[in-house]
Length: 600
Image (cartoon, rainbow, N blue to C red; front, top):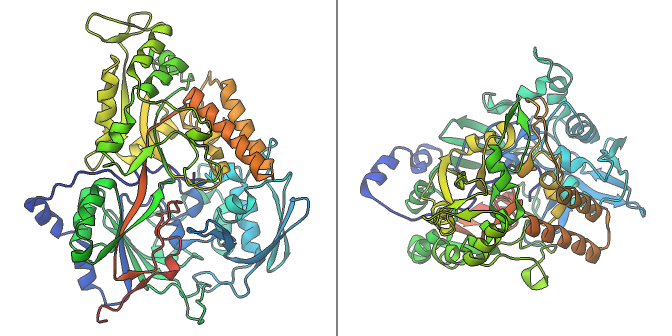
């Protein structure tokens, strides 16, 4: 799970394509082709995203997709193909024998997008003054804490190009999760905002670089700067002239001068724009794959298959027993159902995931049984002993009856006190979702009534992270190589421990919040796995966390789609990866992409 990243909901939407004449006419006015024709003929890439950015302030980003991998870099980076950690802003590093000291040497001559030098002072500022700042609620903070003490590493300057991180204990994910996972921010542009307060006493930083800021004032160190932003329409990124990368021949990178990030909420609309030439690249689902595969030669496109997706899709119940202002967050009657392990296991046995794969995924997928990404070497497969829940409604009914539930003469499920079992499941709006109705249909077979509620991404995010007033959520979380990147999910006080969430700092507190022993055990194992340096032992530790998750089912995992992308043949150098970066898995090497000369 990509560290600090808010969940992508239906990252690669499963859509049914219905192309109607009137839809094409309605889309004509917003087609990116118009922007292309009006613009100067310079090398550019046009891609889509589903929502507007919520902030330009990297440290405050909570959602994905987001602008970060266009605009910011860390000390190191992860190769999307080999999965190896490679130098980025730092040209090299040294690790002490006791694994407690990491010394990074920055590249010579690094600059920010405004021409100011990027030095060790920026690294110190980023980690000490922002990511370890208790007054700044950044999602990166959980991953920057180490061990049982949850202490931050000490970060000190050796000279203008060298920085030392001193760890409180060995921490195996350090290079992948921190050095390559957390970007460096500009001290000269942000220190004043960190050190001054607003009228409410909170740091000015919290309202700095919002989307109402002139994009040209956003200082970055990544391959692209933000040139312009039109709400609900597009972001335009322009090549950063001070970006450090050069190719083997000494040519500056990135090669593409401009990237247009078209804001297209509907997957159907994005597909239409791609087919009409308005988009150069589109992450697709299995249904779209069938359509575009027939058009590969005629449309001069190619489809890349990166294998099983690194994300996870699931349903989760709100297990929070807390109260706010004296009112329970969850109806106590329903809370008793949700907190009954047998109830959650019965739900898992009732969802027909193979039919989802056959129909919604057109056979291009497999069941998902683990919180750890399938491409990760730490993934525990069912063959290796992972507990699974194959479709078995009869066993589900037995579990429910054994847990005190009963049926009326109409086949409706009732609890021991005679209350009908009925709850609301949140799902993201947009497209033509087929999975939520399928779950509703499946659960009706064991007498459970599900009310579907389709809401916007932002509304769902507010409910699950702040107001905490929800019952069941159908969602997804991006994934990665390193299990510890999901620590903010599995730490009992993590900022995305969504199924039993503590409210964010500064919001209305809750009373009566309870934590189970299995939650504490999973958190302890995540810390133990991060401390362990032997890879075989690490896999065994994280294998135990996966089986605990499958036993107690805080998340009921669904299906895993193949990671697919359609690319115009005029765009060269795309090396699509199942390991997600932000905003998407196509741009981990955005600096290498080229636009072919259409005359040749």
